[in-house]
Length: 312
Picture (cartoon, helix red, strand yellow):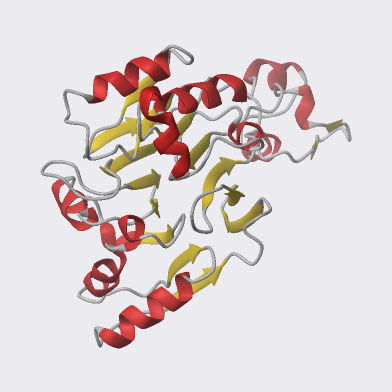
């Protein structure tokens, strides 16, 4: 099952030519999940030829303008096509007010169901969405407004099936092999019971995607993002601007590198939500400072595709 992340926007505060505001789309086989919806999100979706009308859920970190200004356009755009499935919009308190006010003031024509779910207790890790063999949970962050990060984590997968072991135990090829691979025991013609663990290896971990932006570097985040196959994390400023960064309740790129290092098990980290003070050439400063603490750090760029393969 394929999984990949698409960076639709990597900027913070204000859009720039070639750098839209923060937004990441995660595709898990046929499912699409959008994390934040900054200005310019639709442009990148179109440029990448992504099936925006198939987006299942939009997860908003907080209601600052640079994370939600693309949301009204996304709702109106979805009404231009046939859509039978509901669109979930999930976020901290006030996201419902923003959605309802946008619909009312803009007099939106919406021909599909929009289900807005506010996170009741954003100060505690909370499961906010359940899918087929995965969950999405929110994690508390600390910003100038109530803000959360999001973790999409798959359930463990069955172990590797060993046909030779099944053959040695006399399990005939066919439906009984499939039952064993799904974790069910089978009864042979001679009455013997074969258990899945007799023909399969140990369970294999699923994949984990973490999205963290607009926060001070606080205790607790590292534990939540540990073992992430891909961590997308804000690195808004260089360390020489750390005082200003903390006043605005943001992380520096160095903080992001330390977070990935301290979490343990993170495979790679992509920086995002850059201050508009940095030109594309200047961004290498942020990458260098993050890599001092976590070598597998990289700069995300608008319209970048990042595969998230299984680790085995």
